[in-house]
Amino acid sequence: MCGRNRLSPRKQILAERFDATTFGDDWEPRYNIAPLRSPSQ
Amino acid sequence: MLSLMRWGLILSWTKDMSGSASMINARSETAAMKPAFREPMRFRRCLVPADGFYEWKRNGTGKQLFCFEVNQGELFALAGLWDGWKDPGGQWIKSCAILTTTPNAVTSPVHDRMPGILSKDDYDLWLDPGMTNVDSISELLKPFDARMMRVYPVSSWINQVQNDDEECARPAPQDQPPQPQLFS
Image (cartoon, rainbow over all chains, first blue to last red):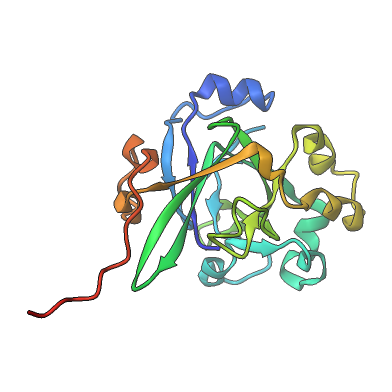
């Protein structure tokens, strides 16, 4: 596979869903995450 | 903890990052046996959040791009492996690869593999650092329930990586294969 991913929810939704306590301040929704770029853990 | 990572695994013991381009995916069926993925599979598993993924399908001489979603665009988690690598300047770079599995009924018409999508109930087990039994872990990487997924065609806008906006996910008419040229 050599696809792309989308991660468009707002930061708050992401943090709540994954019960995350820390998160970068520079988060922006992403619609075209390609390999060798920067998806999120 | 949520953190940004580079997509394309750079193993901690490699001299440079040149091999990462070929390690964006790992086959779930064999990852535990491959030298590159054996340790990450046991000790460095992660969740890669997403609310959609895209794949190309060849049609005739061109390609059609499709978007896959879970529950109409709900947030979900892909099964990932990660590692940390220190570059020559001493900077740590975290990177990841996405595990793949056999396709379900929704993805198989487009591609012979699909990313491993984890059920919410399995997040804790997947991330549990004490769980090093890869056989048990691999059981979590079965094809995701097709009844919870949908697929729709999108435009070629996403082909350019610099295009990173809502247009990427907008449903588009499916491109038709080129028609044979007619001569009068």
